[in-house]
Length: 235
Picture 1 (cartoon, rainbow, N blue to C red):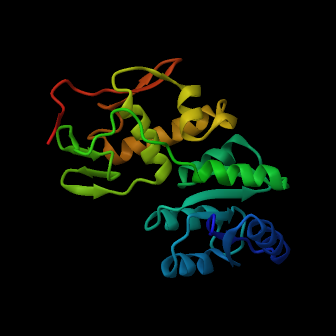
Picture 2: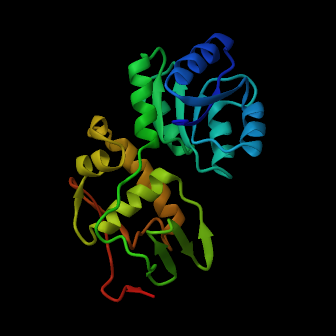
C-alpha cells in the first residue's frame, strides 16, 4: 500500500533521480517534473498528496509555481532551495508552501519534513458533526468545510488543522510552541514565523476585515486564540 503520492519538481535530473529512488524505497508513489509548467500540467491531470518544489528554477520559478498550484490544489508543498535566509523562508510560506528545506539536506531530514507536512490532527474535543455559525462564517470541523459570505473557502490541510486546533480550544490563548507542536510536530516548536504566516493566510480567507481580526486574535508575547462569540450556534 502506497504511503502517498509525491510530485518532485526540479530542473536538475540528478536530484530528481535521487529523490525518486529515496522516496520509492519508502513506499511513496513518485512522479517528477522538470519545470513549473510541466508540474502544473501534472497537477491538473493527477492528485498528489505532497509536492517537493525547487524554488530556483529557470522559466516559471518555484514561487510562481507554488502560487499557481495553490489556486487549485490542497496538496502539501515543501519548497527546496539553496538559500537559507529568513526572507526566502517567508517568501516560500507566503506563496502557499507548508514547509521549507535547504539544500543540501539529509535523507533523514527530508523524510521527517515529509511526514510533518502530511501529518493530520487526530480527532479533537469539540469536533462536532454540525457546523458552527459565526455571523456569515460557517465552519464544519467534521467535513472540513468553511463557508464565508455564502461561498466555500479553500483551505490547505495545514491551514485547516491550525484553525481546527484553535477552535477546539476557544477563547483560550494558545502558546506558539503548543500550536506548532500540535499542527506541525515536535521539531517545529521554535518556528514562530510559520504561525505568523499561516495566521495571516487564514485571516485573509475567513475574517471580514483581516486587518482587524474578529476571530483569530493575537495574544501578544503568548500566541493566538480563537474568539468564539457566546451567540455562536450549531445548526
